[in-house]
Length: 193
Image (cartoon, rainbow, N blue to C red; front, side):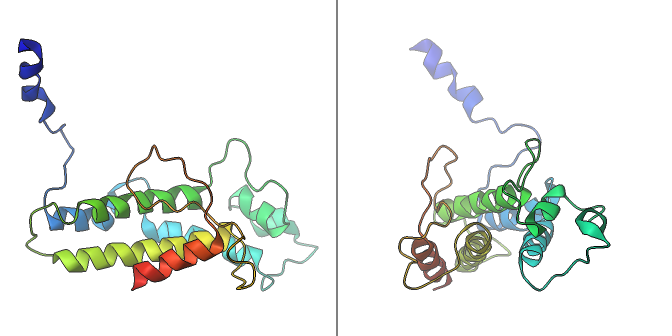
């Protein structure tokens, strides 16, 4: 009993350089400025997703003379694979940065949505504004994810075509199956509403 009561002195200590969100402003910071301080910037995530979508369309043409490798000299090898519709897009040592970063962003957004009603009011941001930003952020992320990793929306098959897992809670231990295209689009619409 004595051992357990003494632990409370150490459990509530915030590690140096870390901040536990306690206000609405802190949660807003998580979605905006915090991303800029991390290893990735949200604009880089969108650029990466945009690159992937552009290379996979029929609106891009590379001449035979230039070759795929010369057309993407400084780009990720995955862009070359996307352009040629290779069976394996990523090398064994490569991470899918678009997937990883969009799900990291969704984790932050879900954390905000899970805790927005528990924290103190902010001085800069209003609780409803931050909740709205989080929902719009998540809807846009899933729109990108569904269009890159799922089948294109077809009303006749959307309820059976697979898209991406719908992570709607800030729990990294959840094991989620792929949701259908219809489920993802229904969630996007709910978030936008």
